[in-house]
Image 1 (cartoon, rainbow, N blue to C red):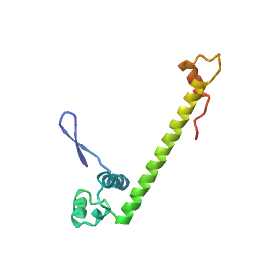
Image 2: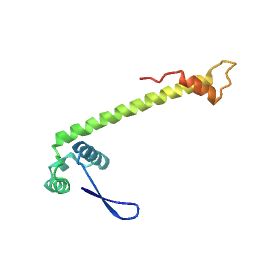
Image 3: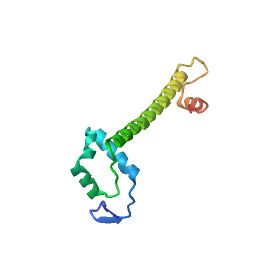
Image 4: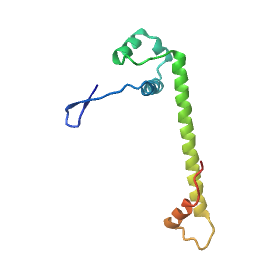
Length: 123
C-alpha cells in the first residue's frame, strides 16, 4: 500500500508494487545528479536507511552501481544521437524545400507539408 495526498489535501490509499528496476534507475540518477561517491553503498548507515525505506531494494556493490550508471549513460547517449539525427533530417528537408529553385513552387506551408510527407524519415 501507498499513501498519497490528493488536490484537496485528503490522504488516499493506493496499491503499490515495488519495481527493482525503477528503484535502481532512481538510485543511479540520484548518485549522478548529486555527484555522490560510489562508496556510499558501503556505508552502514546508508544501507540501514535504505533497508528501512524499502526492505526489498537490493543496493549492490560499487561495481554493480558503476556498470548500471554507465548503461544508463549509453541509453541516454543513444537517445540523444537519434534525436540529433531526426533534427538534422528535418532541418535538411526544410532547407531543401526553401532553397529549391523551382519557379512553380509557391513555398507555402501546404506545399511544404506535401513535400515533407513524400520524403520518408530515416530509420
